[in-house]
Image (cartoon, rainbow, N blue to C red):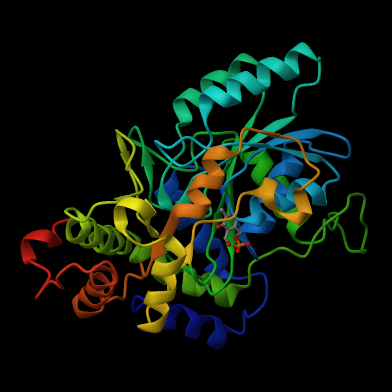
Length: 377
Ligand SMILES: Cc1ncc(COP(=O)(O)O)c(C=O)c1O
């Protein structure tokens, strides 16, 4: 927590606005809009934001929707909630996100069969934007809307523009593990203010205007509570600091592993700002002298928790039967990718401990300290 959250939560309790209406919700949305520059609606989760966002794009039963293959399952599930068919597109090594060349090939092929997807769900993984200029250019050609899953990328930039402001609509997550949190929550943004109003209406059970409980559309119970919005208001104040802290952690790992063979950081794409929500690296087992899995086990024995990169959707039992374009890059990143401890609360001593456990795992000398020269963001 940053410090101001408790006061906003206390206000909610003192005023008894503890449900899904109240001053914190309105203020949280306004404050988020001031940062992002688009109308926003606060919801219970990032998944809810993707679900409503895809509803706004009129996705329905039988539609095809392209989705990034390498992602967390919540990017794809809302496609299924709506009865549509996910089709997965592989990543490129430059960003770890959707490969624009493969997307172009897939769309060309679908156009040839006269069966274009209704939308494309692009993900900005681990705090890094996909190559949005290329992706938007291709999708514009076929007049297909792009939905940005920016759940992991609040604070990231692509060519000077914020992640989540480039497509037709976007979702952010405030899950407990994200760069800022409301304990659980999400935000949906869109260029079109009427879309955001529509999503707000759906998020509160789509109750029609008037005294009686009239419903002419299907709604959801997806509105964020005023208590949690209070946490969000405090967290927004510390967002720039959190991005700097995450980048500093990544920068320390990058410098400390620079001379080790066979370990390379997730690249930061040119003209972009990667928040380094997670510090991810690729292991080449031959050169590194230890496989990704062995490294994870050794770290675990030293009480350091690490995680593999997301398992691609085309390898999931849930989505095994869905068509996919490519998949080899996502599989490689999944098999060789590792996420090191990345929290903004890690002390220098914590980071040095992680660094040295990795170095010891491959027989390199431990570092005596993290040089302050390396701490620049
Ligand atoms: C890429 C991605 N999309 C969607 C989500 C879903 O967000 P939430 O957990 O807030 O529903 C997450 C994280 O949980 C995520 O990492």
